[in-house]
Amino acid sequence: MARKTAIRDTDYLVISARVKALETGLLTGERMEQLLEAKTDEEAVKLLQEWGYPQLDAAHPDAMDAALAAVREATMADLAEGMPDRRYLELFQIKYDYHNAKALLKAEVMGVPAGSMLMDMGRVPAAGLETAVKERDLEHLPEMLASAVAEARQVLETTRDPQLSDIVLDRWCYRDMAALAEATGSRFLQGYVAAQVDAVNLRTAVRTLRMGKGTDFLQGALLEGGDLSPDAVLKAAAVGAAGLQELYGTTRFRSAAESGADALGGGSLTEFEKRCDDAVGDYLAGAQYVPFGEAPLVGYLAARETEYTNLRIILMGRAAGIDPAVIRARLRASYL
Image (cartoon, rainbow, N blue to C red; front, side, top):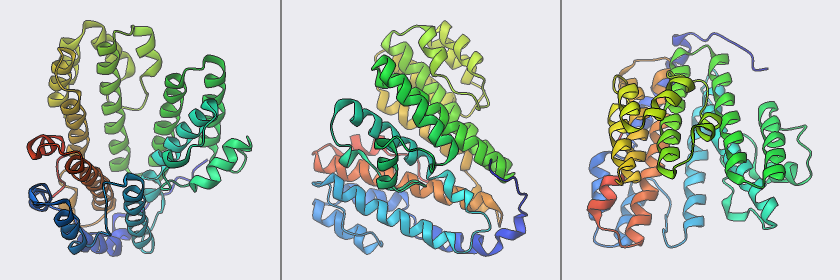
């Protein structure tokens, strides 16, 4: 079980100063606009290199993702040196462990290599997790991850339905994140995890209604740990779009719920997904103005994750010849 340790805000004086310096390197909305308006892909890549990124070639997505992973790992290593509690970094690694578990179990059932589906950005090296899953030797994995893989494999072998095994892994993922956040004693971090759970549950409710699946499926897919209980979301979804709008209308997810209602009427799921992400980002708004403590650190790490997402959207969109206005509409809100 994770140790519960109270860390004082003042313990973050050094790392907070480092974060403030690193924030100046985040890509602003103005720089994102420069990437969108670059006349050629080569010009866009050159701009990124001027801003400290390696060469990112959207024509080779695997290589681009590997390069972004290397940048991310370097940032993590830089911050780890002065950090009082590494668990703040681990919170941003957990989701990649569970992503890799999903990929490995699906590949196992399909009889194909996981290969490019794996992302080497988790707590557990992707190769090590692959070996553990293949050899069914989960003893040396983090406890919750091991339990998750065992349960998800059993569900997948029994039902042959990867969607159901994904639900199992998602539940364990956010349970893992919530336990880690609680162990740090940080209310800010716990609130950040709760906001993510609320976003996941809203997404799940809208997708379930859009696919015409029943409340039994939705009940099994909703997660514990958000500010809104699964029961409340289930009851709202039973009413339909109006019920979700009413439930989320007094929360930071109001705009996302409105977009979800549009999606249920045939509107864009892409816009809905963006608004869900932006609502979680709204939780972090203002963290950069906190002088010290864990909030600026968490805000910066989340901002970098958003930056990587936006870079992929821009570069892949440009490579596909998508109109800049369409790409712009898909970008997540900037931290700065």
